[in-house]
Image (cartoon, rainbow, N blue to C red; front, side, top):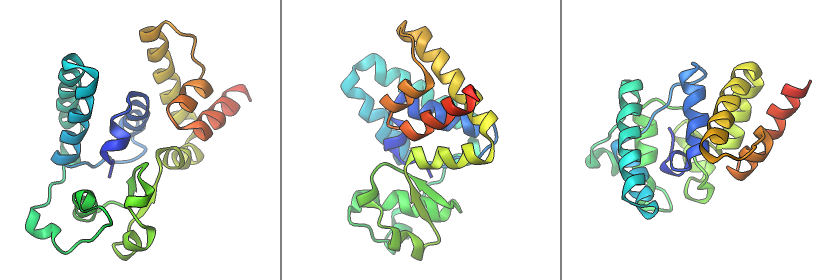
Length: 181
């Protein structure tokens, strides 16, 4: 289950979805998670929100089985410190997920998740786990994201520098080490 906070940053989203597109895992999200992401882009302007809306539609078309929605009545049995995150937990359980990928560790206590057969991972750890299983594929995905970032920004990004800026420094270090070996 991808939380909205890992879909919102562009580089993070592109690496996560690139790995999903490569068949390394099956993503899951809810309508509410996608709505939170699109709403979060509003602070970047109307154009950004429109682009996010189009990207949302593409994500739903590319992964039709990824959408997991849970009626409010079924969410009532779940508890989290932040009631606004219960929909994420409920969707992960109903969607038969193994992990919730989030940067909000405090909102998803490990013991509560374990009771539901889930674990929490930050995107850096989650992607490093995928890298450990298939370093070539993850490196290829990262290189594609870096190339697109260079094209769009005109900056000379490296995997390590771009992923460090995107809060995935350990993945960047691993990929750069793999590519230089």
